Length: 493
Image (cartoon, rainbow, N blue to C red; front, side, top):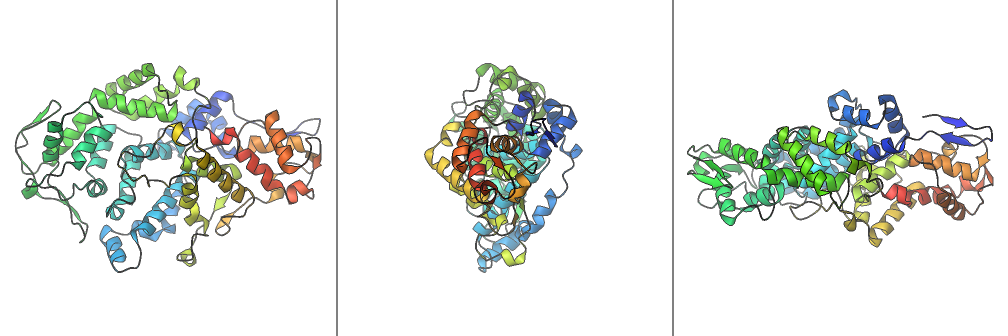
């Protein structure tokens, strides 16, 4: 994205059309000049979005390298447990690495829609990073979610619900016919599929029988297996799904049950509503929810036609600026707006505290209220505005904004833009400079209110001329950048 200079000497930076900008706001983790160029080169927001729905068509160089930054994310479950048992590495350290890893992906991946949908499903099918023993399989669970995030929901549910991490989190890895554990069956019905009011206690009990036999070697090798001797055989009926369940190997029956629930009309409506709340508005229009639910069922639970219809809907178009960024979204968008580059921490960074940027990312989120996947209950973190439009979130976000805008913290393993790099030309009026910053960081022209706020923050007038040696650039730039990051434009999407 190049700057243009007007006859009056005012530098301007191109911005996207309002409709394209809205698509980027909702379907990415925040504006960058490079993203704006991609949208224009694609021919607009809708064409950019359509290409994003096929991730393999989007080059994403470098994102895979983040895995090498955190060696334990590639270790086997048994190795991770032995390291914890011997005191080499605690489970929370491994999970902090996983949180950092996913934040880096969200920040720098070119496959923004894939990352966003991976987060949505990882929250819907929530396995808390603090769940007992789940850390051994948690990163692999995230990989499974990402693999299916833009595909068919019935396949996603089968892969996620029957995954070792989910089994560990909900005590289903030791469920047997003698002692069937109902936790997974209950959450499968209540949270993952049809929702409250759609099932009975008998449905829970019979679903629990179907799900027996899956086994994780708890506090041993953590190997995942299936024990036919532990499966409860016998006819079952769950919400109209009937199965003889006569085979000691009940895996086919379990997959059939999950598929049936994925295709249930109540599941279609719950998933449609979640998409609308996340991507459109907390006050989810019922007409849109029902329309998307119908498309979901008509396309065999493929989520892409649903997303296409949502993005092209009148309700989506009319919902600009109606969603608040949550903790993780704020942190990622701040990194993107400031154009910072997080670098590989290396071995010397481990055990030296959390001053290295790659390890501070979860801490930055915590200051706003929640680290990724840290929500302790199985229902997943809230996605409605009332959870994130709070004074404590504002104060935590403002602190993060100030520390990063001033290049104060994190101070190691990160490359900030030099103050003079923000100047598009040698000399310019401060009001024009603020407009340039707003267009570059936030993707929108600066309003009069924003210019006035920045003037007060920098103690200058809009007509003052700034340059590389001016006090605004040398000493007060952090105040100006923070003012933009604290604006409603940055705090919403």
